[in-house]
Image (cartoon, rainbow, N blue to C red; front, side, top):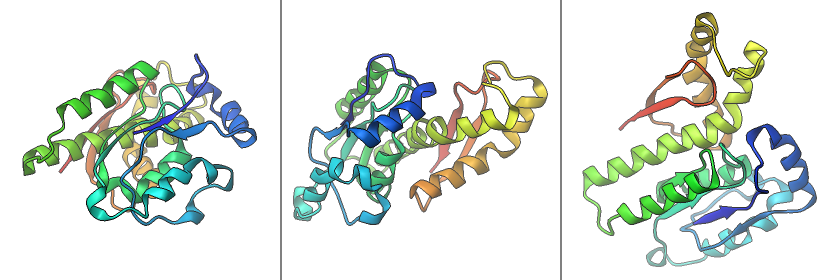
Length: 212
């Protein structure tokens, strides 16, 4: 599993400040080996390359030594690290799960639950369920919360804590396309079909249902 450290109490609104701090002093650390495959080093920002050195070491392992992993990304509250996401994108077929939502406790708790529910020899239906939930967390926690949500705020010119019917319709009309494009920009070349909704007419959370 990956763990990305953050200061207590930091929220998504502090992302710009935290990104600046990461440029000055790397915070990310890998706490266990990841099942890694070939990846494009040039896709990783220069100031993050050293942070992911253990991932590079894992690339030299034999295939039989590599297993699936669950990633707990606690860089920020309520959203994942885009730098980490760029490294994970080429490895998504080896992800058992991903979590980066709301609090550190929620993120780690979800990751531990996924590990506890995992089967060493999953059936086809179990594997589809794992993949579906993993994609839902990637598209929500990483893509929407870390990128698309801020774009939506700019579109309507406010934080989106309470959306009018017109604002909700405006956001909903392009939300799926925005998420798909942002996911591909991070490096997820094959995004599965999904449905997305704003269940409570605000931008703080969305509902994503992946179709596999």
